[in-house]
Image (cartoon, rainbow, N blue to C red):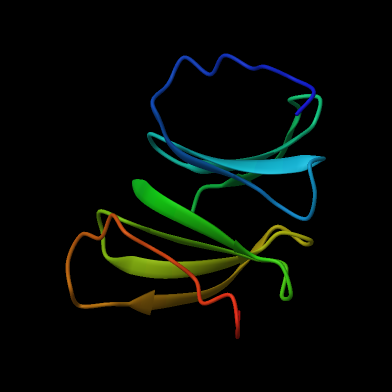
Length: 102
């Protein structure tokens, strides 16, 4: 990590993406992808009230889940929302990926 940024907003989760040149941050309202200089690359406004994020390196997808209970997949290369799944389990603040098949 080459930069330090002050967001003046609550950060709930953060994760590196492909390598150390990009990282995603789940802030209070939305999720954002920043480069290693702290410049905003993508604003993911479809991801709201996020508690957890996981990056799937083989698919270049960012998976998020939060207060709404929707599991969302976002393509980090194009910046588009790929899929949304309703869990029907309410708010979720835990997420882990299986390293063998992710």
